[in-house]
Image 1 (cartoon, rainbow, N blue to C red):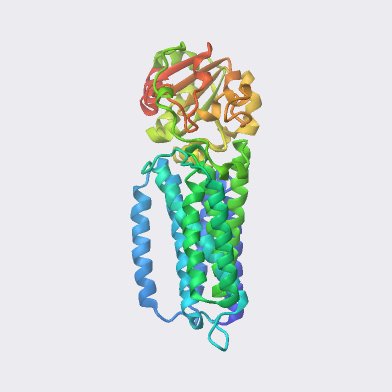
Image 2: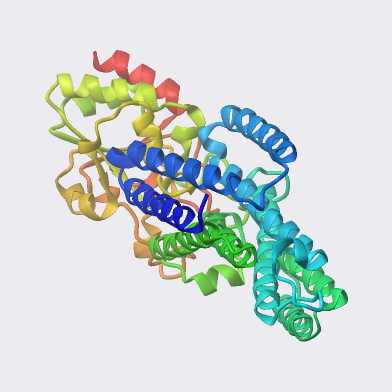
Length: 464
């Protein structure tokens, strides 16, 4: 296959990747976006395998079979509630792949066509390897830490100690110095020192970040993995890897910015860590010192049937209970009674962008009744009933009313402006940010202490 043909096919694949990202920007076009992405990746892989430098199809096929088979098994067994940690785990593999390729290139530059006449490395290649290696190494260990926190293998509390930021600064400077020495000499020792420090930095940078900020970190690691792939793409002289890596890196950075904005947090503030860990034990469980109004499915059904408009706010509890299909039946029952029903989605609902949209799409909820926070917030004042199912922090009024709250200033869904509020939740336990929610104690709020799926099934029976 000629170089011109390869370039044209890579360009087609790159265009398909761009179309994939565009398609994924809206639920209605997400399936088409995924299809474009799969076709583009298939073209990129097939073209790469046709290159003259590829001569050992046995090992490639074996690796693809093992990796692909393992990926299918893992993906099929992962519930939607574990999607954030699955994404973090995938990012770690991208970072590890970048590191292994860099180590291989430094060990045998002739095999990659980046060796000088004397058998060493070109300066440009060493700079590329330096960038790809330390970004990949940080991505690898940071993603592993993020996975363990999200999956509950270690505490989600921030792990902080005196002099932590100074230590990270010193490690960063030593890593940079070792990288410069490697670029100047091409020697193994500074390269290995730089690699080892980068692996440590991936851990020390993430451990002080608490659970509430982990969605931003997962998005940021997505960006890191893209830049690591792009850096290694230069080493391999592979335009497709450079383009794909740059697309992933830039889109991940943009998503991180969007999520920080949705949480009223700066990326710098998130990286400094310390917020969003486990809540104190005293903050969990049903409160005894503040009165709440609780009700049954029959009470909620009476409110919903007599309402003109209902806005449903889904959250992580909905995903945990796998209640999206039962909730769809509630919507259909209300629509039979001529009730206008809409969904309100917060940008970070479900601990991952798009999490709620995917769940609702899985239950075939019509896209035209699913609205984002910016478009629906002004409607709550004219809403008869706001039905909150499993959401917590994204509807916490302290974000607007309490200057001392850690989430003060975070954009929230203004459910408290509705005439009536119904909250379906197992208990009065705190949300992911570890904060109590004043919404639960309002006079207009009715609490339904139940599993989301069970509550929705009982609502369907009571409404019909």
